[in-house]
Length: 227
Image (cartoon, rainbow, N blue to C red; front, side, top):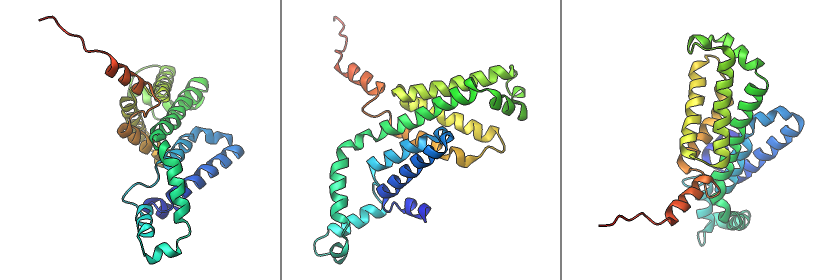
């Protein structure tokens, strides 16, 4: 039912809020869920953006707002939804920011904690799949290299620098893992795939180094050459 609701974009913000609260509740009980921190950014982003259009939410809102519609007479939620939309709409522009922070934190945490700080599991993966046959380097170098790449991706996303390029790198890293490890759990990374793709489209958002650098470039006078 939850999958159908999300697929049809019905009660999108309500479902996102429930998902966020469920994640935070699970995190309080099981701290290792911090390794899936991208869910928090994803749910917050959906809360800010809403369902968009076309969607079931948009269709029902249009019907409820139509003068004289039968559905509008029996929909007690429409005024509440309208007020909430008015409240949230000014912050919609920050959706890329919360997505970026969620994905960036996740990559940085995975790179540092799972590989650089605790390399045992990563070394076992290198040995299990004989990754040194793909790139003939010391297993420790494999782990350090992978950890530094993930950490760099995370830091660049956190500060919003070269966001679209970094999101593309993140997508390539995830794809390489998917096809390089035969029994890699796809569902464990599906949110990162989706959110990285979203960041490739949206960019870093208004609170990012990308935006700051762009404003500096736009405000700088163009050099002139003497004729």
